[in-house]
Amino acid sequence: MNSELNEFLEQQRKGLVQLASDLRKARVAAARKAAHESAARIKSLNVRVRTLARSGVRLSVVSHGAVQSLIELQGDIVSSALNEAAEKIQQMAYTESVRDLAHLQAEVLQSARQRIVDDTARAVVILKDAAGDARKVATRATAADVAVAKKKTVRRKVKKAKRTAAR
Image (cartoon, rainbow, N blue to C red):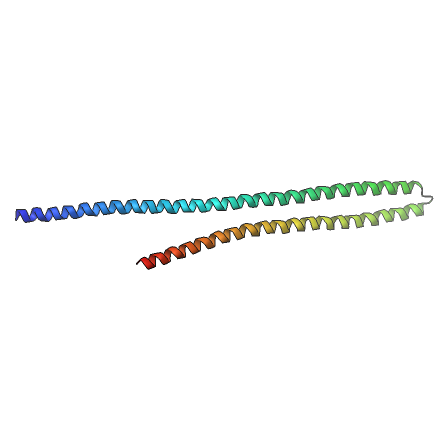
């Protein structure tokens, strides 16, 4: 009976040793799998960061171009207003009556109103173009994210199919 008990205990000990060994191996395999998956996630983030950085650079170029155009427009507005004012003042110097002066003042107001409308239209065109360019940058960045997401979906489907086929 003592030998049967020793034999039983030895079998139980071997079983527990085997179980502990399997558990250790499974934990190591699970840790390796987790490390591989983490590395893959980090690599995918790297792609997203690059895409975002490129989009930021493109958006910066768009905004700088818009600001440059608006500054040039502002310079044109100021110079044309000064030139027109100088011209009208010179014409006022040669007026002979108050009636001519009033008529000239009405022309000044009318031309100023038209110049403001034209300059506003030019500013709107500049801003519309900048908005369209910014939209293109955002669309390109979104398309890159969608492409990455599609690749991930395909990879997951392939892995799932392999697992199913292996069973």
